[in-house]
Amino acid sequence: MINMRKVAVVGCGFVGSSSAFALMQSGLFSEMVLIDADKNRAEGEAMDISHGLPYASPMKIYAADYDAVSDAAVVVVTAGAPQKPGETRLDLVHKNVGIMRSIIPQIVASGFEGILLIVANPVDILTAAAVKLSGFPENRVIGSGTTLDTARLKYRLGEHLGVDSRSVNAFIIGEHGDSELAAWSCVDVGGLPLPEFCEMRGHYNDHVAAAHRIYEEVKNSAYTIIEKKRATYYGVAMTVRRICECIVRNEHSILPVSTMIHGDYGIEGVALSLPTVVGQNGMDIRVPIHLNEEEISQLQASGKVLKEILDTEFPE
Image (cartoon, helix red, strand yellow):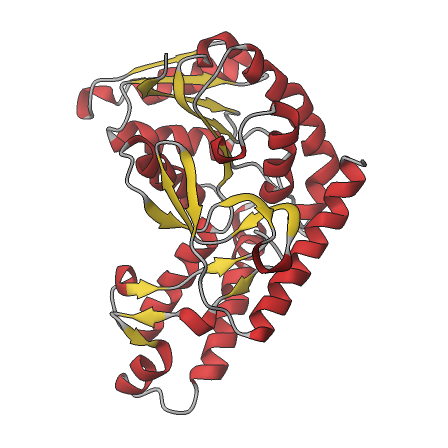
């Protein structure tokens, strides 16, 4: 039986431990299991986070083996080799698919029936790999996808336009990586199309150049952060928290999570990010946003990049 107040985090590196800390602070769960190949690391993180509980909501936090995930509502998989300076997310494919081949069967063997949330990179390839390796219904396996990229885009647009980023409706879609794209044709700010809002704020002639500059900054954010501090983890930890909120509260909120695609925009057999209604059952339905021809072409190219790599790891 699923315990909707229980979460498990697999992998206690920077991303896993930051995610566990964010989830502790969220108050969503009353029980959290930490799992890592280095059991001492998992135990140390559980102790460290637990020591802040007198200033938070009551919660049981402990390290354990995979048997402990059987009744969890969500298993968050962050385990994987980290991205190094100068390395793309797709460079991580082979070694992290290998790690998935070890982790996923153990989660399945536990009898787990909840939602599998893949966060490790390259997240789209690993989400598809998790579907293939687990045999779970596709709605129960989702990747964090471009949810963080979308937050970065909304943050930068809000900063540029002098408006609360929560009032910006925008999506980064496709691969969480170099082939991702901003769906500019459906961006609005407080209900106004982006070009109209730009003019209202006095940006009459530079909004196209500014949009391109902001997109490039968003796409390269991880590389910039890794170069400066060797890893990214706080932003993705908040992303994990937000996705878990949607699942546990059955919000049916729309997030650009990574799920298996079958025919959308002419794309087949890969996982990538599109706006998706997320609730207690994971993926509910994808939202068919209106894209122009250039955006559809870019999205298809993104899908092709992922398909070629996935086929090398899982040949038919």
